[in-house]
Picture (tube, rainbow over the protein chains, first blue to last red):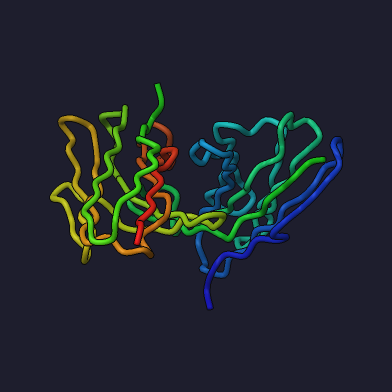
Length: 115
Length: 111
């Protein structure tokens, strides 16, 4: 079955540690995205990538980093510089980021809790 | 000003009721509009795209009013399984067609 996978589903880390969230898709989509969702707030864009080896900052990129070495993979690192990292992180993909008519498909998400 | 604004609810309605959600957007140049559904602690899933002429999918009807810059979602004959949070999404051509999500409207259908 085609889809987007994220791992792990739940992640606990100590304050000050970097952590990397995995996102893999086998939909052959060009564009991939990372969002964070906090209670009472809409999804906010962290980073996105239209093509391999290229990515752009979203609205809340500070304290995060990404890479896009393969079309199917777009891992997100939450660094110690992120002031409030506890959140629900969602990865998404779409056929082509440049077209506004393409829906985004979401992975199941990772709940990160920093202790 | 937020790109997208939604009434967070909650909306609590009995089974069989008709319920409507509205969502306003700030950028008049926005081109694409969607409604996503998100179940508790799950990922959002596309419910329907919103076309200029309006569109219907079974019990669900979406409308776009460009003059007043709002979109709406109407659910008829509500089912218990409709209980979820409904997210309004608007794209902005000024930012490479980035998706902007509303905070969501919570719906609970009561037996």
